[in-house]
Image (cartoon, rainbow, N blue to C red; front, side, top):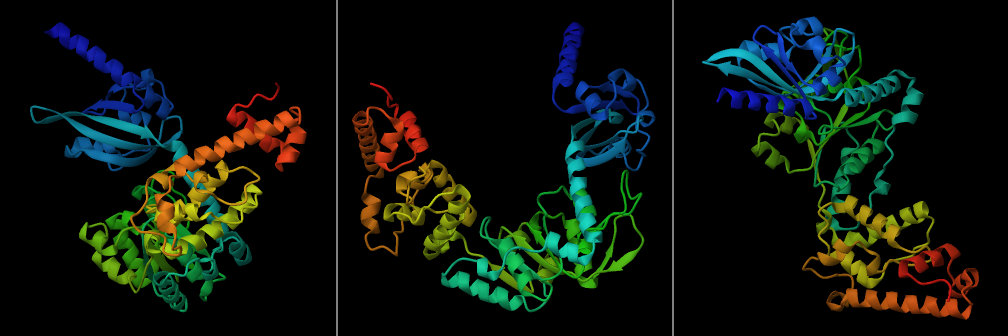
Length: 479
């Protein structure tokens, strides 16, 4: 039995050595018992340097208060997904996401196991972005405007449906004040476009507009981003202005607010109430004047019910409430939006598409668009990638296949013949068009004795387009 246990321990140790996450095991005195290769790579040390050594000898920047290892040894409570930044004995700065677990025997803590994922490079890039933003903040005001002004205006918002136009009207009224605005709506409905339009139509148009997605940054980093940091607040912390200081006099747009930690929501509420910001680890308080626009991709009432949003913060932010309807509720706007994206991608792709066939438009209107306007934009872009350079309009067989296979039960209201279009087999038509095109090219090639240039001129297409079609249909170029 003992021999089996020894074999099991060896296999277990081998497994921990080859896995792609760092594993570090210490006893209750802080002495390293096991340290795998991935952890050594992350820390910039060798295993033999660490095994048998006291934890604090190798990582002198950590203390009993800042080390997840020590907290677990002291409390016996596991810590999951904690971001920790530390410096090793050689001076290398490392940032990891740790999960740390106490090891128990007969009710006593005998050690702790830590599993770590290296995010040093990600944090380094993140710091570079913050530094660039900080440089903009400290630059002259004229440079701030040029570097960070919002691009979109109300004139860029496309739609004629009654609910959409009503939302625009409310937003225009809200732009006259500095009251908080809460924008809700599914992903891809254009919430940031509305936020930028409100900013550009208001008195703060010449000041900074700063946008931050709350779901894009771990909560442990988000506090420093929002409120700034003071030198010495934690390992590696420097004096850096937060979003509120940077946006002072302008507008701060916080997207996906429901992803923000409840603790940070409480700090956000205090800033909104008092207009006072204190950097993390700092003692100095600063008065700021910032207009707050927030956005959520779920209904605020749902967020309240699920405990994702503090009720006091909700009532403070919900002074002006704008709800953006999903694209499925704006059927009449799909032709307008499609026309807009055609203009956009004509320019990007160097093409001259001038419209959409009735059957293709029916497919666009009848699809349910879970990704909303963003998905429509991507669908049109995908269509352009499938079209030939000489095409003049979008046909249904150019569209992504999923648009033809998943339709809604409603019909195209703008076309009285749409129900006939829906019953038509687009697959059979596509096959016939391809067959006819192949036969036409083959006959033209034979007529012009397989001269590619003359054949392309006769067909009215470019030489490159003809060569593409020859490869596509597997047409032999010589008899």
